[in-house]
Image (cartoon, rainbow over the protein chains, first blue to last red):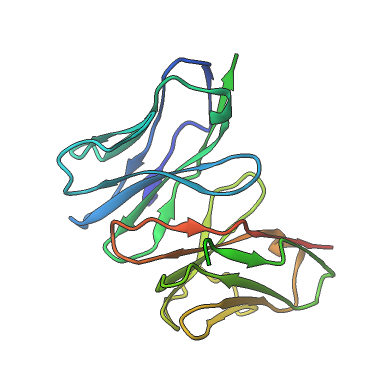
Length: 113
Length: 114
């Protein structure tokens, strides 16, 4: 069974609009962490935001926020006020305890003027 | 160092040759990970080191793949008798470990087997 599921292979958004990238996960471990990474065309992996399973509030980092719905096992990334430079692949990932990060298949976001 | 360093950045090799890919993690990061990313695909886990030991090698695709880490620092991923399906970007990442610590990735080695 997939541990991390990203159902949107591609998304389009107009500049300055907000966009939500979906991520659902599957785990029975009560202690886990959820991460989002951005991968521009240059190929580097850039850490964006982290949410711990015990965190009471949704994580925010600048224009990025994580909509964490624990009961639904979803951890959607919200990007506000999209910019052309946000065009990239976005990967959701999960770590259970001290284990490795498991990545989803990614969503390609394209921001148009 | 300031970041995770991988070398070479690009490697073209003939089918059947052996290759070595190097990763120099961030100083003090005890955990080191290798992933593989084929063109347009997600990240496939290969192996994880904690210090010099590898508690999880479950992602190595075949016995042609091996990795070691020395001094709790530099790691080498070796692919023997390369095949065309080994062509991919090999990414290394390091971390302080623990559930709340994300990875810092290197820029990757693009391996092309011809």
